[in-house]
Image (cartoon, rainbow, N blue to C red; front, side, top):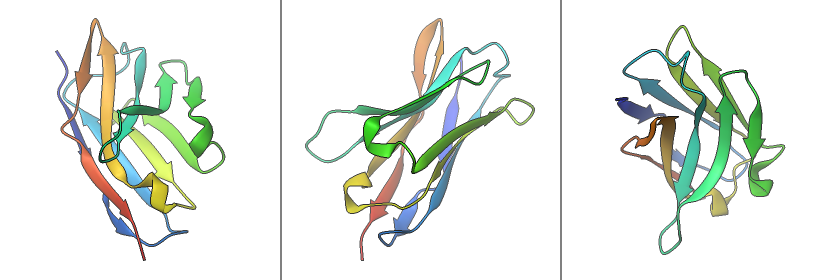
Length: 114
């Protein structure tokens, strides 16, 4: 099993930046797929970005060029650097890991508003 704890959410103005962190309860060296999803009010949860153990990344079209996902295996942590934030990025952001089953964090709120 894997427990995931997100942090780093908050309120930011349009055009601002935030960095989300996802700390895992165990080594992530052999967790092939980790990433971030988000869910806005009244909408379905959607993929934001994923990263494999080899460092391959994948992004939703809506965040390409603005968001960067990375992982630090020594710290058992996955990051999501978010720049040029827009009001439509407002959502609860969830960390996930695929390790046999899918595991989810509790979510962290990101609000982009002036």
